[in-house]
Image (cartoon, rainbow, N blue to C red; front, top):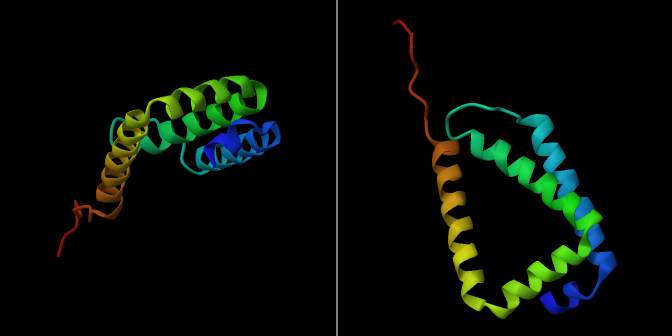
Length: 105
């Protein structure tokens, strides 16, 4: 399946459009430059926007990156572990109950 994606310029272009749209949507709703975990969401939005634009403007770079990953199967495992850790961190902070400060009874 990745090989088919690698040889389809139209598919690379469409995924670039979808990625750029998703990144811009994230940035429009959450563009917080703060020094805590919420910065990860903003960073993800920017990286998604830039990655989508890169696929549209320079599809050969996407082909080269996919070829590199396919030649090194352990890199896919490492990338998967990194995304799993990022997802776990975002889930932890996203679902954590914030302590109420300044409330009087």
